[in-house]
Length: 194
Length: 253
Image (tube, each protein chain N blue to C red):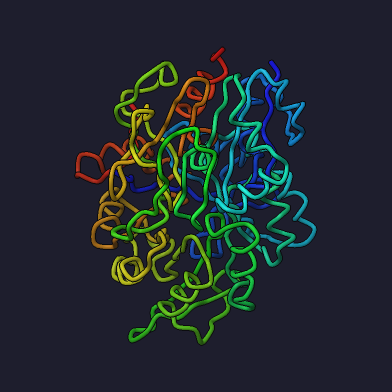
């Protein structure tokens, strides 16, 4: 299986690679449009700041390329946020795959939201085989609001979209690559998408 | 609801785990990667690997250990011990560590915290603080607790946050190794003042001590070593106990 991780200088991808390796997959890391277009599946991870990441994508015209992809595509953490319409983080226009806003958590609790939190209202094949009380490891200060594309929720300060889906585009706010068996099952379910 | 984290700490010497009792006496408790994998399987929420030798010769061994841990363990882990430069951190993160923890080097040169936060993001910068109670004040110690400083612990914790630390790992030297409970009062004082998570360390002896540090101590996470290594408190039993006491913990069913 030809899995490509999009390279856009947004954080460390070692954990994603290690988890995929444990699932028997050897991903390619690339920002080459041809390589990305030719992938069976594309993974878009990321930790970092939204406007810097969007600038990197735009300079290489990867923003236009991503929204036109038709193979299964998975955004992780910042990746999910960049797939939304707009982020409050430095007032950034994002990719607009999901018609949702990315909002900063109100500091009623400690921000960032860091640690393990429960998923709720999980729907669809991405959650097949997951425990009823499924926990994912999160590290983020901004959240995606809830909308029609929400396929799982979590709750910190308020409810937010823990996972999203529209057509071939999937996204998860937490880090499945650091979330033990639950995260591994989620990634395995993604690898089964066609 | 965000859960309280249980974090076993593995003290590392030559790629193997040891536990210092009151920072001095060492006992061998096994292979580090294997031990880490067992904890992950048992429901540990994160792991901390602390290189207690932290010499230049051991750097490569540590990076290699981190690489092996990252290949086999799928929960977040922090690496600490002798980290003093951006290059050290870069090597460990590239090997697969999720977070690094700095201690003496941050006290020596606080600007290191800013540099690391800027370069790698606050989420991977943990500042470990070893503190000792002098009756009327709590003072920071460095070099594994051997060197006292003139720095007041509460003020230092706040400064670390302002400089960009993502978490504080607070070890009470008075409580460490005693199994008489965590330093709840000081932990609470710091945790409620900061907007970053505080990991309490030092003094875990019973399951009740964890309950106390999450309630009275207002800790976001609790770290312990020997009680987990020598199987005095199995992690699944601890989580079941905390859950029954109304503490939010990660138990997957």
